[in-house]
Amino acid sequence: MRVRLGWVAAILVLVAVQCLFWFVAAEIAWAVRHFLTSDPQVIAERTRAAVAWFVWCGVNFAGLLAFAIRRHRISFWLVAAIQVANLGIAVWIGFQQVSQTCGDHGLEWLIPIGLAAVTLLVMYGAWRRRGDHTGPAGKSRRRLRRIVQPAALAVWIAAGLGLLGLGWHLGIQGIQLQSGVIATVRDEPGAGLHLTLDASSRDIAFLLDIYDTPPDARVGDRVAILTMEACDYGFPLAVQSQRGIWIDSTRGDLVQPFTPNTWWLHELFRWLALSAGVLLSASGLVAIIRWIGPR
Image 1 (tube, rainbow, N blue to C red):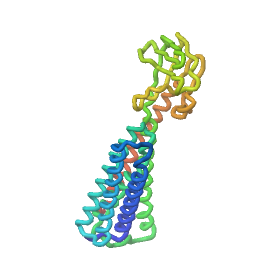
Image 2 (cartoon, one colour):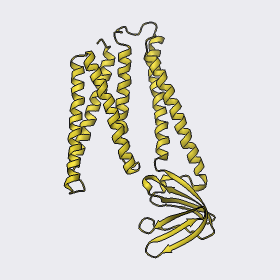
Image 3 (cartoon, helix red, strand yellow):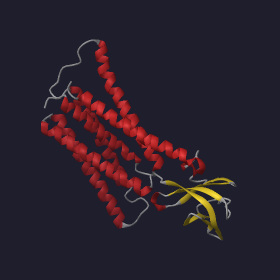
Image 4 (cartoon, rainbow, N blue to C red):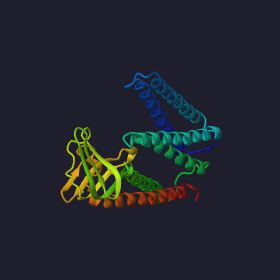
């Protein structure tokens, strides 16, 4: 399979970086398999995961070696298949970790996801331009355009993906607005403050072992409350009423600089980021695919 040297170099570098990532991930998994546990089942499960990542690193390295030694059609499609698998595995592991930790961990898997996606895009370009060994011809302006155009498209796609990530990150904690008139207030000694709203029978708790100081809340007050619903926590993060604004001292950064009464601005910004991210990413991807195709 005849592929231009530039495409080959890009593919080899991207695949080599992914081999390094899987090796580092396997090393870390192996090193922490005994971390904070003495349960043999947990240790065995972590050990199997580390060994599996070492094996998968070897699979990636085998594909890299095969393509580096001989750029045959079989080695090309072998590397492409491994990249598809890398993408699927990284998405699956990242989604699991993000879901289980409510966004505290798992975002690092965006690295192999991005690397695999870019590698597949480069391999698509190499496949579409196979057999074309002619360099850019014409005037310097045309040569410059052939360099600037794909770079601008890459930045365009990156901006779209960044907006998508921002919109997703802003909603990952599942923060919801509860509003109404306080129907009941119950201060349990040694436990904390509990209240309910007239619009719902849900018990909103400000437990002493979680919150330093509960808000000033009394029956009949009209309040707006922001609660974190991710992982079914239901933790109150901020309360606003005619008595003032209360923000949790430990997790208040999840809502600041917004307040319950201005939370609609946060949601508007989140949905605008998601919508703009989808439009930018999709249009940029279509444009770069059209640029890669034979003209």
